[in-house]
Amino acid sequence: MTEPVQPRVLAETGGAVVAEQGPLVLVIDRGTGPLATTAFVLGVLAVVFGGFGAVTLAVSAGGRSDIPPVVSAVFVAVGLVFAAATAVAVRRIKANGRRPLTDYRPVAVFDRAHGVFTDADGAVVAPLPQVQFQRRMQIGSSSPKLVATTPNGDWILKRGNPFSGGIGDLDAVLTAVVHGR
Image (cartoon, rainbow, N blue to C red; front, side):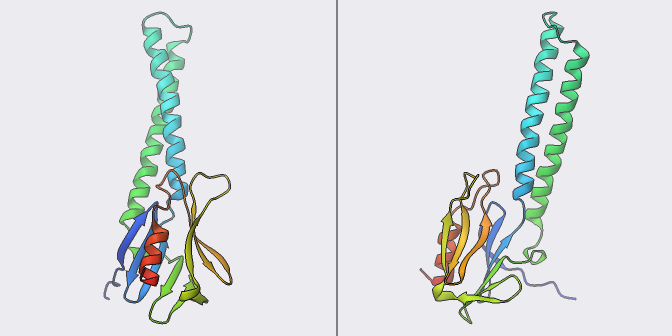
C-alpha cells in the first residue's frame, strides 16, 4: 500500500491550513481552537492557584499569615494539577500539527482545473470566479472568521480563535492562489 501524496502547505495559522494538491486548493481545519482555549484557561488557573499557594506558603513560612500552611500547600498542588493539564493540552495541539494533512477532511476544496468551489462532501457550491474570500467579525470574539462569499451565500471556512493565532492572512493567500491575484 502506498502512502497518499501529501498536499503542499501554502499557509498555516491558528490550526487552519491552505494547501495545494495539483489543481486543488484545500482548506483544512486541524480543530485546535477548542484545545487552545482550554490550554489558555488551564494555564491561567495554574498561575492563579499555584501563585496564590506559593505566595501564601512563603508568607506563612515567615510567620506572618493567617492561612494555614496546609491550605497553601493544597493551593500549590491544585496549581500543579492545572499546570500538568495545560501541558497535556499543549502536547495534543502539537500532535495535531504533526499529523499528516491527509488525515483531515478538507473544509473546502477549490478545483482550479474545473473552476468550481466544492464543500467537504464534493457538492459544487459555486463557480470560482463568483467566490470571494473575506474576513468577518464574529459576535463574542476578538478574532475574525474566514468566509468564502458566493452568490448562494456565505461559507465559513474557519472561525478565528485569539488563543491559537486567529486566521492571519489566509483570505489574501486564498485570493492569490485561487484567483491568481
